[in-house]
Length: 215
Image (cartoon, rainbow, N blue to C red; front, side, top):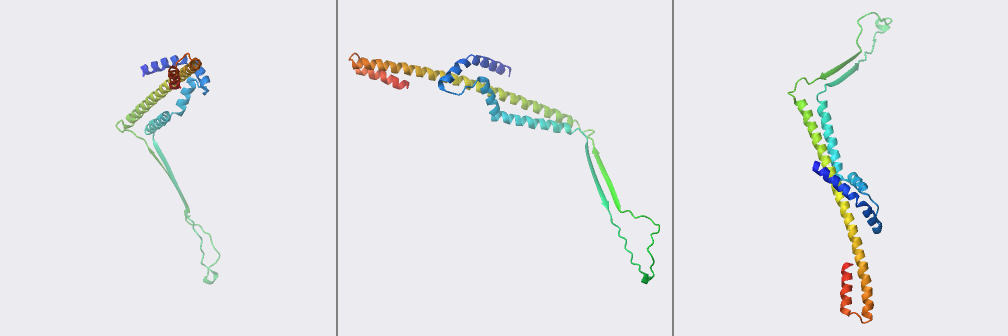
């Protein structure tokens, strides 16, 4: 890990010296200006590998939280309410000797009932399972974070290498273009010499073949 970081730093600073030349190469190629820092930021932002690493970190963080929640007491509350309707039906009529309704005293009837239940469970002893579960989840989280850091450094290193190779390619293209320009210029001079009888036709064809190969 330490050696990789040192290598990344050395590569980063060495590439900084190439950035002005690379900007000039980009101008000559008509390409988009893109600094090394911008290239690294874009690679980190759009890396599917790093997005998967972030998802694994979130999953490991959730496992740690779940493991910690296991040592907390569990509580549940339930309740119910019941109401009974007691209709008053009076079948007594005057024909049967019934008189006026009387509402004398008596034992009241319960028409409603309500109750609640509260359950609380607290893990008192589980053989260290909860504590070891929390520690295991934390180690897993740290391992995932370290893997994500390694993946990020690998993406950065790959971007720096690609940036450097692109610079080398642009320089090579410019060199080839310059060689082609000089070769074509030489062909023009040799062609005039051949027309004036000062150069053999075969020598002119060899020079033109060389220009064709460069192109």
